[in-house]
Image 1 (cartoon, one colour):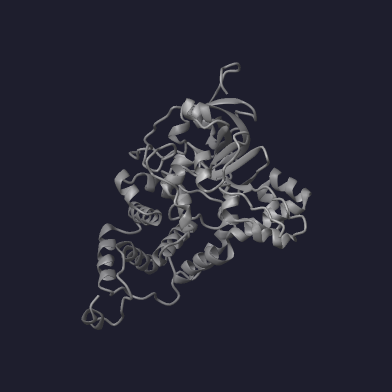
Image 2: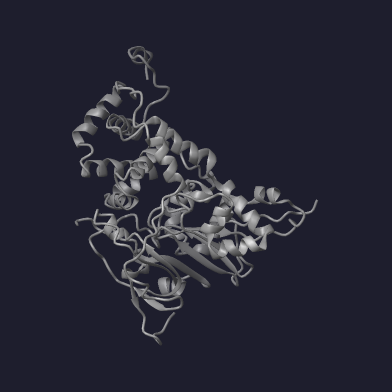
Length: 235
Length: 209
């Protein structure tokens, strides 16, 4: 499918980003265009033009340098542009031409009665947007089972962070069937799978460099997991 | 921008427009033309997440859990159903799991892969939650990150980090602070901060005057 999984977005455990900038207060938006981008993505997803999984896949496909140089909503904007081209809704020429009009301040105004039902639809999606589904197979694992996260590096979207791959944990919760992002992100259907909350000891992930008395809980799909033989060492 | 430039147009720009803002205008204009977008829909989304949905919802849920032990039990057993009792839920809260802080266990939520966040109860995430600094470090050195927020945990307190890697969303139920026995539910809710429900701070105790 040609989309590398090990993208820049998978930052868990990396060093060098500096302190958390929480003192700035953390407003969600810093400019009006960010609000518009957020709403555009919301409206497109509400209409099924692209899914949240496709949006994440598109962000992950960014060049690492571009990803880091972009703000959060610039990434959303890039993802929307690429996905709309990919889906045949817009062309690169459309975007270039319209950008030129925006630069010269000559964009046409919104016609009366544009997308008349859309505001109602987004309100509906704000109220409800479930991704829970009936999985084809019953859960393979139970609460308390030892599992190991597979060491996998597929060339498609996935939701198994690098830091957990190959690590051993315990099933903490069984959540039932959910849309499988690995297929859904590539337009290959929902293919629902069982989802589990798996808890890993900090030392299992970070070795002796772990802070003592810490654990990490991740929500992982069944095909990311293998059973851990009883009596195997940690955890 | 020069006055000559401004005079040459039917409208004026109060300040330079960023490249991202221009790209946004371009894509908005195209989508409107294709019937896939309207200003009314944009406004509906933005107003919802700026005004109607935000940390005040999470705070009301927390305060209710503090004063109503039966609600708290239901909340911890099935967050989605319990918040529906109070009329909350929807996008970013369809599958809500509430995790409880105790004197022995401290919970903190994150999303290392993107920025998954319990929109329905906390609104949209703060910018620092979305930055690589928080996402990269809170899984690797949660105690150090919490200390930077001013929360220094005793080594005997277990730290549990919840990395939201699928569509389940997490909310931290902070500990009810001391000195709050006389407060009403609304007064309690007013003390519960967004950051305490992410798990990076505590709800401050009320100090007697």
